[in-house]
Length: 273
Image (cartoon, rainbow, N blue to C red; front, side, top):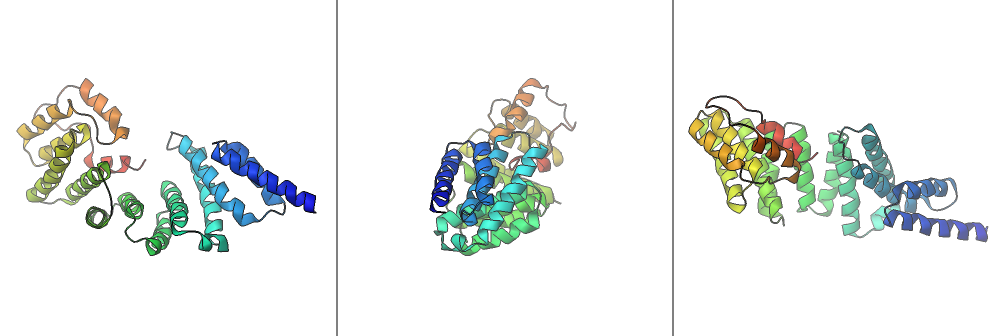
């Protein structure tokens, strides 16, 4: 029995090494072997969660069924671990990382209500966590609850330690939500003012193009064309929108009053894909 236990201990160390070296498939294979043996399961759960999460993140196609399956499995193991004594005895920072990854996985498979439950747990640990409020922004965007997105953006900007590009992205998201809810010209102009604040920090193609869309919406076509031109000389705030920037550079300008291909509201979702 002692030899068998030593064998499991060695296997567990190999399991952790494979995880740390990025060999997720091999680590998962060893993990299942350990789960079939006598090694303490709760030590394996969290590592399995990390491995499945990292496997999912390696797949670029957001609609890939295997990617979604990996996220589901990561949630399965994270939830098992969160309900153990080991999780309760962890340092707060370690708990936060596990909860954040669990929340991210849940959001990406569309289980928003369950994600909110874990957001509450994260809030109990650290109510000013930037990742907590970024997660809530993401959840509310997918649920089309733009007023709540705006509230979370305000909290993030005023009460948490967020720096640099994060603040710019949050302001940009807030501007798009204001625009999404806008019924009057002054509300659209408020959204434009926020976008202008972002442009003061950097010349971003997607932000300039969004401003053009907003001006088009209120019939100010001269300003619309001005910002379309600007967007062709800028780079996107979000690197994921680089394809948009390339499309802009290769396209002809629309004539005044013509609607062009760029959905400001849909653009909100791209930040979390």
